Amino acid sequence: NAGINRMTPFGRDATASVRAHMEVNFFGTVAITEAAWPYLIESGAGRVVNTASPTVFGFENQTAYVASKGAVFTFTRTLAMESLQHGIRVNAIAPTAATRMALEADIPDWLKESMVEKMPPSLVSPVVAYLAHEECTLNGETLLTQAGVTQRLSLGANEGYSDTTATPEAIQANLATIMDVSTNHPAGEIGSEDEGSVLDLLS
Image (cartoon, rainbow, N blue to C red; front, side, top):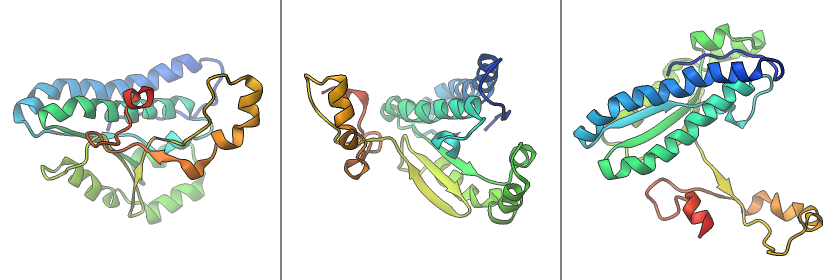
């Protein structure tokens, strides 16, 4: 759960900012998981709970932070594919709560006040406790959790437009079909028949 969040617009020194956020938010997650991994395998029933962020939907002036949390999201889903054979479950939360880091962030005061009133960390705790429990059956999932609401955050793809002779003009003419959310199908849970890995997409 270690993390930093420096709210800066993309521009000069952007690479340094992204590296700093990745070093803590992403590589910190990877490093502690790597250290624990042999013991989790030995246990045959280990649990990993990472911390992603709802900002993966996008957050202006937080490109570096959001990129690092997006990395945690995809790391969680992909590691879960490897963990199946060991009996380990790897999941993540994408929480919003009035934590110290959130309240020190460069965000509007009204938002901080709302978070204090409606989003105490205690409302996130039950989700973490379940994901860390031996009876947790989820794997590769990220759960949005804020203000007592818990939701599944998922990747997905729609039916799209198919044409092996497509031209740029054809893509333009069929954008409505390509962008049609009504045919969107979220990827399934890791280990299920509809997990939707890249191999499924290429088959």
